[in-house]
Length: 259
Picture (cartoon, rainbow, N blue to C red):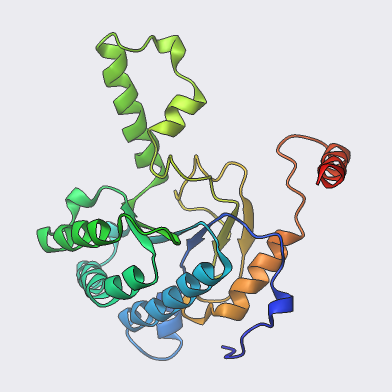
């Protein structure tokens, strides 16, 4: 892992507003060092600190991290217990630092399944940082994209059953408004570390037009240099949203002329 910080000139001008990351490879990182898998999860906390710090420095609006999926309950019971304990410890150790740096912490997912102590720490951390105006840090915990869409549809179904909403009035916008992070721009850049190339039930509605970036770097090794490589890759993408490349070039030219 490189300790060198990228020069300011290496940071692209075209930055994403919202970055979403699957932090994969903690267990493999530890196993390659002959350590228990949990050691990799602990090492991964430092990578979280680094990415949160640089997002704050660059003025990125939102960062969403996939910390614990709804499928992770299938892991060995001991590992799940250690992960939940680490979540509590990280909240207790990091929340004041986040607050002092004006980070607003949000936890998305079905947290009712967590132990009462963890739920309490989550609510306390979110309440403490709720009015902060800096980076919005979303931690996806006991989260799944299918769960997110399902809970949104249930809310709309209640309104339909009550006669408040005609079925044919359901639109993409109404569904979006019931999803987690409905008040934020959808992720511009999705990053997955660890070499796998799938989204694993993470933000499956919100990632519809995100730029995807996959890296072999295991999460504990994903430092500032690796993050800026992802930003550089994003800056070279032409985001067309269904239009042609020529249309985008013409639009950009018109915007420059108006500036």
